[in-house]
Amino acid sequence: MKTKLLDTLTFSEKRENLLILLKDGPKTLEDIRTSLNVTSSGMIPQIRKLEEQNLVRREGKNYALTDMGAIITSVFVPLVKTIDIFEKHEDFLKNHDIEAIPPHLLNRIYDLGNCRLVESNISEIYEPHMDFFEALSKSKKVMGIAPIFHYSYPPFFLKLAQSGVEVSLLLTHDVFDKIKKEYRPMLDEYLSLPNASLYVSDEKIKLASAVSDSFFSISLFFKTGGYDSQKDLVSQDESAVKWGRELFDHFMQKSSRVNSL
Image (cartoon, rainbow, N blue to C red; front, top):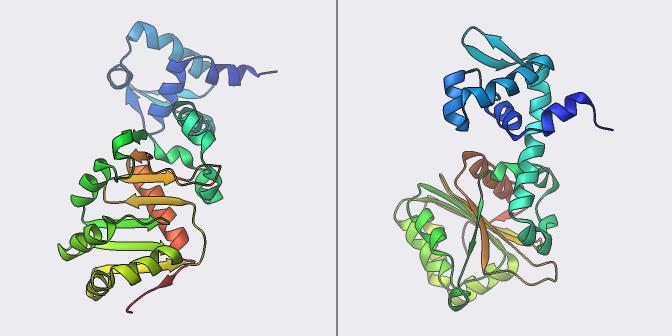
């Protein structure tokens, strides 16, 4: 049976949104109205309920989380955001191998924030998403994980590195061997640049990702085994960029750096 406190947290979207807002610090009623697009008459009764449960308190003109409210919100907010991710992208996530994501990051999938699904047209199914190229082209730092090969990647990432972008790439052995065999001059040129690094993993990594200064993209394999070249989850949230860098670091720590051929 739900407790009265749990009812307070879950039975009102306005109360949920207010707790999420106050997690970032105290807010005036005007701040709350503006941020949540609500009226005073609609919000004040919800504030009173949170005050009654000792989750929110009044501090002069501001409303803030109580100590108990801060603790509960630190657990409650990730749950709400995780549910939101799975509800928005239910079909994508249930049909793809999300267990390829390291457990400690999968448990924080809510960090992908306001992610959206980018899908190629059937006629473009074998082409990388333009969002991907455009976002990385405007970056100062790029990290990429590639368990699959695409003919446009070697010249694209070489050009990025030649333009001064700090580029770090992590490849599976199969992809590395193919590039070494078919794109040897480009690979030699890439490895000669001081701002370019390359890592090779012995693992069969079942995801592809790219992360830049303000962009993160991840694509997954189907549960049936094939790689989905048509759909990417992308996000520009700061938390998603941080999550993406941690994803790269996780696999990099278990990979070998290639300094020359």
